[in-house]
Length: 324
Image 1: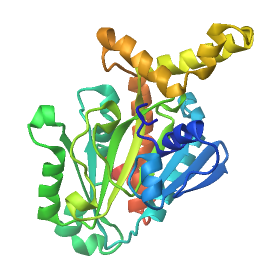
Image 2: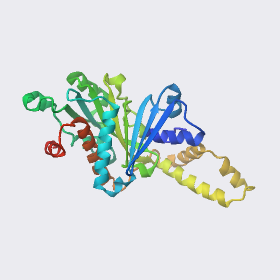
Image 3: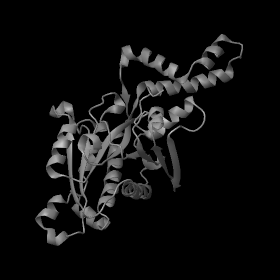
Image 4: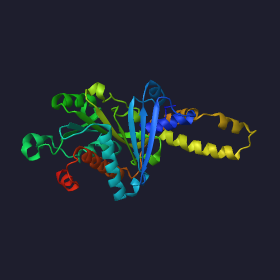
């Protein structure tokens, strides 16, 4: 069922419910709406939920705002505030908290550059608290950040780089930002997922690296991600699904063609499409043509949300002055 590639818990839930009726065992769901923004909290509670969803135990909170593509400044500000509130709800923060922000991904590839772009706009304060503590005191949190690149650039597993830094500077909390894969085109750059389970970089595109989580790093890990790509086979699968449903309505029930279409499950169709596409395009991932502006926009929203969460005593004006 979960051969369809997605990093989003809400989509894993959708896939499960497509195959089975009723509630998912070991999973609880809460949904709220805020003026054009839908917030869905999917909590995986036990091993039953892990087996059903294919994801670790923990909370996965998704912020969905389809109109973000329209560059609505008021909506962007609203999403940033909601993101800040979610971060504060999912972890414990104070002026004494030492936070390390890690922007995962390859800054040379636009759909994978989300993490580095977010890091470039994070307010960095750890050095200020060390150099001039009397001026800042307990008014700001100590924040440091890094964009470690990817294995192909550094030759080092990202988790090894992060673990080395964590062991050296000893932060209390790690926040990662990464690009994700979705199964729906409409969710690209309009959906933000926040999870307290860590992350496996590259998992959505079948390039899974070693996980960055509390077990591997030794401190709590908050993972923030935005889908920027969709698997080509998933797009083809959805297209065939729509076409099939249309043909079924127009085909007589005693037709052999109708019987084949009706009895062919979604996963069978997906497997067939992957088999057909593989000799030609293999693992092709698709991203919108306007991906540059989409990444620029969503990265700005995420950095604002993180800054609001980590520096609640700062005004927006002060934040703007400190962002480099």
